[in-house]
Length: 304
Image (tube, rainbow, N blue to C red; front, side, top):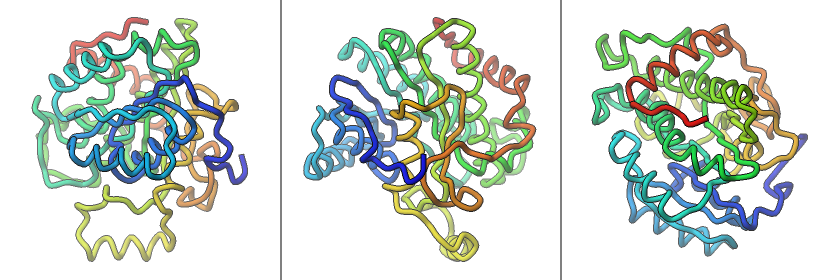
């Protein structure tokens, strides 16, 4: 896996891909790489105008596959369902689902259903989206679901189920870490359920290391400068997208695995199996509890 880049991606002609948050940063670079490899890619974005600009840029940069822009607001479960129904009406199957979109340390806010925004968007919205699109994934001979987590997941000691609606004083970084741990647990639990049902679908997680993108827009400038000094080096979005692209396309990928950069502390580098570990990250009982919570909250049960 040393120095793996987009040049090592297989030909993706005939494959159908969906990337959330595809108009900027890692999502944009992911969609561009998939399109350059020949896949038909849907850019799922909150702002259609920004999505169209991203589409035009991808075509300008050499995109070969068909490109579509579709509006998706992960902070609204009803809109997630509307998006999924629209996508299913236009596609017979789905080969690559990249759960990339996210929010990072915003001011305190709630989703349409009343959940803390980061937990609702980064985890629950993608849980619902994957569930709605699961029948399309099953129609693929070799589908993959890639969920983007973060190294911040290691900072979360668990999921505080009594603080998912801002019941307690807001701590933006704590809530961000919780949401990213939730995404990782979702990916692992989905893998376990797929294996029990003898499915050909792979569920994989990835994290981008330390990558400078628009995701950091809510971090105060003085705090951002402190982080820059702490990390010493930040990757550009094209490189931060590589672990997710590797997870989505490489033949050596292992279902249930977690990929990230191979450099020191996994801040920068090229795709490799992540060495991040915490008791919460591998807690199967916690993952099952989180899955049950998500099923009850969304009313979605995956048709395994």
